[in-house]
Image (tube, rainbow, N blue to C red):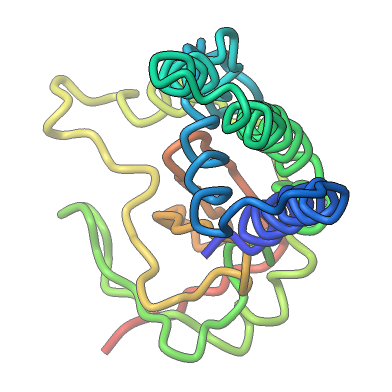
Length: 234
């Protein structure tokens, strides 16, 4: 679960509820609670556009479709007093789109400050059930040295990914791609990311046991340690 997004959405709903209660208390003729909630919900409907923002899509409300629907409904039934009673709640529903937009804009910034992507500990927090799998026939039998790996995690530095250089290194002195050695010939399974980060990475280990390649749906990250955390397997 992405804890940052959950908290921001929760705070957004609390703010919407606070505004709704304030409107409710100021009204002389109180509307029914269930109708008030329904009007706010319908007011959320809007014509929106999606824009890219920090590896995600954010929705920007443009036209208040829900407000128009509610206005047409009350106008059709000649319920002018009804519209005046619920008008602020309808517009609150449309305003809620911008409250959620602000939440979506702030969430990645807060997320990156709490769970920095340049720290391996964000992606690997618990290794109590970690194990190594071979992903390529060229790999030797290796085991994870859990003690060494645990000590190296906080010390590993993020490095630049050199895809082209890695490819040419693997193809050097071989005639076909099938004969090439795989640079990341092992995969670590059973590890847990930092609680609340909401990330579910695929983690590969370099053949020398010193490099970690983190793959997420959005990005890839490469970390190097000074010492190997693999040992000869049985």
